[in-house]
Length: 146
Image (cartoon, rainbow, N blue to C red):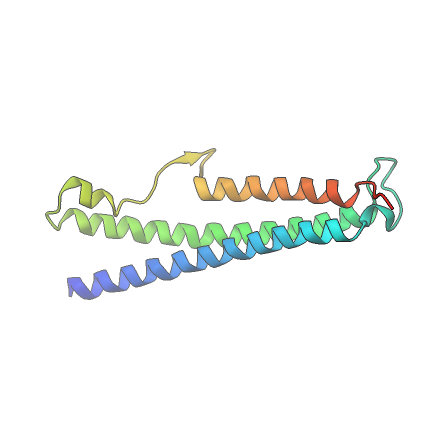
């Protein structure tokens, strides 16, 4: 019975890890595609200027849409990350009873490093999203040389 429980927990943890990886890969794909889009289409020349800021309304609208996508992706990422973390904690508790060395058992311990209460991948997700939005708005409103 213990082997079946271990296999089920490991399978679920692997599934959640794959979902988190897929969500992150989707985020990276959209981030770089949005930068390519902003470089290819001069959004600064499309639509009115936003209150004398030098930014076009169309570029800010696209940035808002990207922000919505990033928020939805982050929520999804955090959800599967939490599930994977709890399952890894369960595996760690089981591994402590196997009589392995502390070094081998610690391989099952979920990473506990946090910045502002977020795990390092989640914190990097937020930094990447913010950086991508800033660069998107900057590139899409940059003056184009003819």
